[in-house]
Length: 392
Ligand code: AMP
Ligand code: MG
Image (cartoon, rainbow, N blue to C red):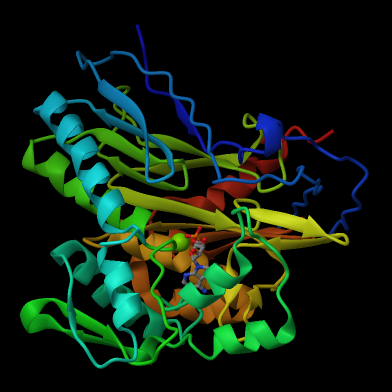
């Protein structure tokens, strides 16, 4: 007899496949909601972040989950469908992800590369419907987050090269130059023919903070089309959508990995999830260290540097048609905004969003609407934390 248990939001893939707790890194104890954590280092890792998922699936209530795992979109994808046309849903889902992966690339011949090369020429570039949808939603939220999430952050991503072979700390002049080409207002969209243009040479779009979220919304639609009412989709553990209930007839249980834990079984707590998306983001996914400083992959477009608001990680749960896209965008935006401004943003998002913040000083706190009873109780995670995290 099997049951679908917890999805562990896994460890970042470290250099050489090893993640090491450096130990001895001081962490201030700060009481918040009666909880604190001890931070620890993970050895610098390169290449893409890799999140290990562990799922124990089995049958219960007569359900036989159909699952498939593959590496797509630079991450480990796990699709599970528990009812309906399971196999078709999962197979079509995988094909869809491969298609999106190709569409969202910056390779020669891609929409994004065409946009970049046409930047500043005044030419409109017709893009695929999927890319157009992502650009339109992203532009809207670039505005709503006051540019904390900015879909035109590409020049900074490229300059710093975090997670690539050419990652480095650029000079102030280089940062200023790249930053001058960032600005969502200079991305123009034309709905009639799905066209876009960047009004200044040197601009480029980067979909890194939204593509996975967009993908899980698409997967949900594919599942619905095939009559799948219960299932789970996970893109590297950082973007997850839970449909219905697990085979036990209960809410899915999603483990949220602590940003500084090197053991994938060490997590903050478990989020109960049903018909909602969960995204996580943080300074642990892709980074390098130099002179004792961590340079990570989430940039504050206002400074041109990795965001420094005292956070290590943010997890967002959202509902609704764009739950995946929204939760993905919000993790990035909230990471850039930090606690105070983030709070204002969450409050403006309404009933459908709830977030968990992990700060560098070990504080973990929750913002959002868990009290409404409609949203998963991320706040409840805080109650479990001391028991579930096996700090030394
Ligand atoms: P996420 O892991 O969802 O926070 O996405 C991070 C990725 O989004 C980075 O690897 C960059 O490609 C891109 N990115 C970094 N900073 C920003 C930002 N402020 N706005 C939009 N995209 C960003
Ligand atoms: Mg994101």
